[in-house]
Amino acid sequence: MPGTGSLNPAGSHGRSGVLTAFAAAKVNLALHVTGRRNDGYHLLDTLVVFPDIGDRLSAEPGDSVTLVLEGPFAAALSAESADGDLVLKAARLLATLSPRPLPGARLTLEKALPVASGIGGGSADAAAALRLLCSFWNLEPDEAELHGLALQLGADVPMCLASKTARITGIGEDIVPLAGIPPFGIVLANPGVPVPTPLVFAKLASRDNPPLPAIPGGGFESLSRFIDWLGSTRNDLEASAIEAAGEIADVLNALRSDPDVALARMSGSGATCFAITGSRRDADAIAARLRQTHPDWWIAAGAVA
Image 1 (spheres, rainbow, N blue to C red):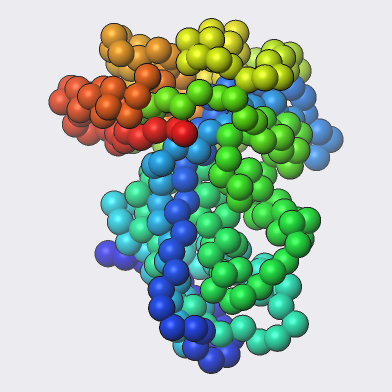
Image 2: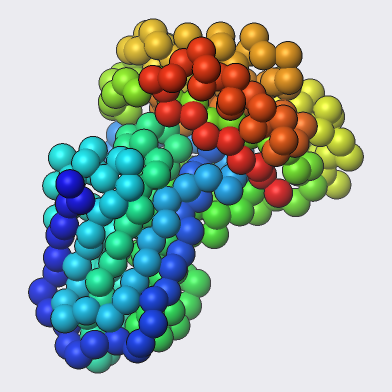
């Protein structure tokens, strides 16, 4: 059953019509843990991409600001209480920037990404809400204001706001967009096991690791050169995540055994893993084979442009 949540009424109906925003999954192709702040936040150096796989958020006029959850993972998100969902938190924060009462908005989130799975689904949804409601409410906050709101919602939300290939450092607030990354096909696979992020970080053997190697200033002239560079990087959370959930190793083994996979690794703190291949067509074929052998896994194919 879809879940619902709401904010207090904020005025009259908004403009007619329905607006939509795509909330792309955030995939960490490489993730190095480089330190830890006194407040407990870990410092990261990570390369993120945003494939055409994700959730979808829509807004239409309503008497108040409400949220309806639909899609295959709506029930999982409902179990975490829709009233605390990041989409509504984003709406509340954005409303603080308006000098005038704002109209209601009926928000519908089609939840296609698994919850708490290392691909930033909740953060992507919150970022999509900020973008969507800026248009819906005709708000024009400056970039710094919007970035500040995003950071209040979570360390991953600022990078999801742009949803562009980038190198991210700090706790997620230092974002450097990257050009020169060749397009490629990608497969995402999740075994359906919960992996609490605090547990993964608690099991880390080292928190002061070297940063990413230098990225060529002119980018990579071919996918094979990019794969070679990625081979010199890692996900520092992968070993501790596998210790917490051995099923992640099963996913990686399945991906790495496919002849069309150029590189496979875990994203974020897990349990979702990714495989890079040459094209969207190859990704579709890999995903089809994987669904035959592992029908109980969540599997999606897409591309990174």
